[in-house]
Length: 531
Image (cartoon, rainbow, N blue to C red; front, side, top):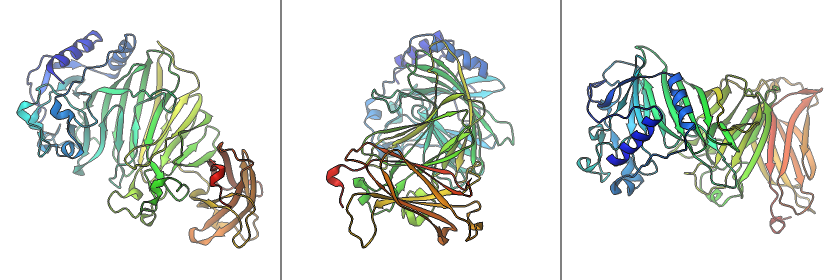
């Protein structure tokens, strides 16, 4: 950011109630950090007021003109920029948390204002080239603007100051780890018009306030201001590291206009292929599976548990699951067997799951799932979020509270047997001539009381399909997992490639034994239906 753009941006913020600071070095909160201006009073009520004020004015994007040498950096050059640990916020204060900051560059070109919050007073952190080791990035510190700014930040916990436990970087994206110390899917502050025919809007976190934690505190509080053409918002994050990390999120949103599709608590992940869906060209890869998440889990307001395996569709796919006051939902990585991935570089079996737990009634709406075609594992193609039934209007306030749970073990699991694998392939009976095209589905259930079922208990698979004919259905014991395997074929009713919705659960004596398996299968074109 050029100095003139910095001043212009400060003028815009000052008009909305933000102080326009002059640039000068202030006393450090460690011994290396520099700050801008004087401390200003801050609390959540003040932040909500700023978001409301911004929303009452036309959207004015902050100019983010960067020097050419930053714009031209490639991935390796950007990765070469390393933050100097002695410049971490609170590095010398014997606290359990430290914060380090990301340099602008590559995909991250929008400067973000960073503040330290201490005793109810907030002061903005100044960009300083001394914070960074530029290595082989090609950047020359003495030639960079003094007011360049930051791209985001990451957090370290005292148990391991080398590896970060969470990072906020790019638009409103953030990630965290559990006990496996592995990043994977991301969360977002908000999603606007995701999966619609028009381009998606990506709201940005423009300001962060990191509250200095108390000595021996195991929680870190971060505040954020979000802004976009459609909405402004005030966020409070309470981050608590653990084997399963918990982030308590409180959100206040102020629309500028009517929002057609507002995604609350959005999660973003990657699914390229797995045992249930190997139809895309990338499935020729030597690795058996490639995905950060393998399914969407839903705990509906009526208590029903659903499991929807993910797919990599040929065309964008959008699914809606209506609900009222949902109890939770999440993108999970249930398959944690290294043999199923065989990737000893990125370790997909260690990728965290994320569960969204509402802490207040969200009313009527829908959990929506967007699946986008991809042939590259470096691109996220899966998004899920809560969409309120009533479209947000300009001038309104919308409040949401929820917890995000990050890790390999989720705090909420079905009190029933779970789906542990889904496989699909050509239908028919081996050794017999096939007279029509069909597709086989194999679903493995395990857990809860399935191992206790006696041989005299009759277990029935309850199978429904929106179209087509279900054939050759069966359920049998599967000793390898101490569970049961359901198999059936589906014969399409015609040559249509319209998706078919499937639903399966197990029943014994009228009692439901498992969560409900949902699937959406798209029949192949007629020319590809090999008999």
